[in-house]
Image (cartoon, rainbow, N blue to C red; front, side, top):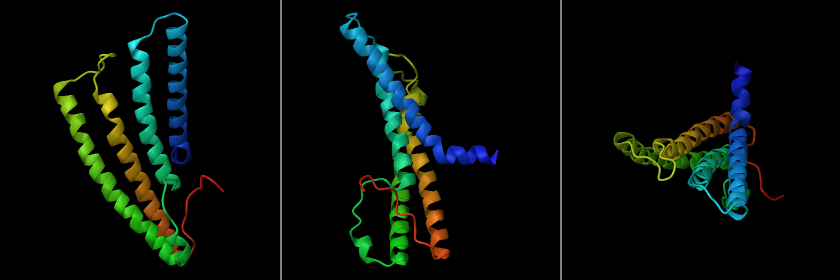
Length: 171
């Protein structure tokens, strides 16, 4: 069971991103064919692709937090000793954790209002809570990843190892 959870921890977001991205590409492709070949388009295609994209963005934000792949200005880190770099990353993670906590708190209000009043989507006529949950789900995944990052950095600093600096987009 531990191996299963380790696999989800390592690749869960990647598989979700792949699934949502594949879904979006498939739906858009089908809708383009339907619109230009059959002169007919559906309401569900555009709407499901839009909501899948919202989930894709929030899951991607969580994956970027895990890999420290968000855009950042790190010039000052080149001039700090390894301990200073670690403390700087931990400070950034704590501030990001506070921001993600506020984001989670404030994003739950539309979900609860939608749940209370039973609002539905325009085209699909499905309860909107399923789609509004993308934002608090993304923030909760980010919170989990930030806590993991802080724990990893503290362990690295205690063991006198350099902290994980993240993956670079261009090298």
